[in-house]
Length: 433
Image (cartoon, rainbow, N blue to C red; front, side, top):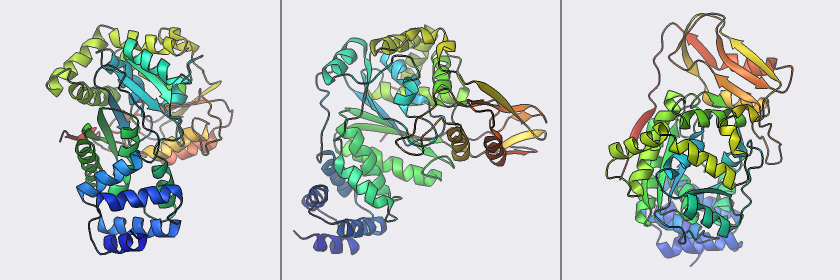
């Protein structure tokens, strides 16, 4: 096989065989295929697309390029959740103990954040003593005993994807459905899940800006998962404004605790129940999404979900008393209100820019080396569709700096008050096949 022939075949709209795709992925990972040829193929894929079979073959070739996590010693059907990212996306903190409270194994591999706020691990490390540096044996034991554990990502998961993504990032080929779908699914499959639930975001705070783009990506990933033997479902959800009210690590943890108590924001609660219902069905604990949702609501109402969260924190060295005493979480030195400049209805909150405002406070990382301030961030008091009076607080800024004028300016520039506005739709579509 010659790389130039494969490039020409895809350039002309041909379908690559499984053997040709494996040849490309293996060769590029090992360094036998140069960047200029791989970027040429990526551009050909960008314009010519890939068939369902090609997408599945590309995904599995990337899975097989590195380590694969073996979860076979964990009892039951292991269901994983992936979100394409957003602002104030606290779902994992709530979903994991909620689903585990129904005796469904949640064996979660998570990373640190780069961007608006921290990743799941950063948020959990706002709990004093909590750590993810546990052995694979301990990880398996905790999930078998308590149905929940979180471990840090291994370094050699899908090295082909890391290398190809870095190339796409500098060659204008990031925004390609087959390349995005295979990148995301390769990591989920390599992480060992039996079934996968996807939360595909759309809106100004998401990678896929339109519902149509998000739907194309969601359907592509669901097809890949099912083709390679992983039962997969997806939800397309709104990220035109931040999810929930809290943006920032300890603040989001507080909000997760409230949500597990049944006292969380309406939109976060609704999304968690919708995603969780899919996880319960895929784990074969319920036959319908309606039944699954009722089961999840019952473990919120009877307190079992909150107890599961306490057990999870304690098992990984964390101070579980923060669940009953959230004041023990890191807290910011200063609080500033952002008063509305006029009366009306909030008509727009540009999610990614509000996320950047929280990062300016120190809640996120601009580079991998940056230290996160776990205490700082924002708590929204108004969302799109809410009425507001002039002088009323739109949100509270939690800061460890005494000058937040630039942050306030950024927020004012990205929150619009109009005469009328409707609340955005939270869930646009549920994809089960």
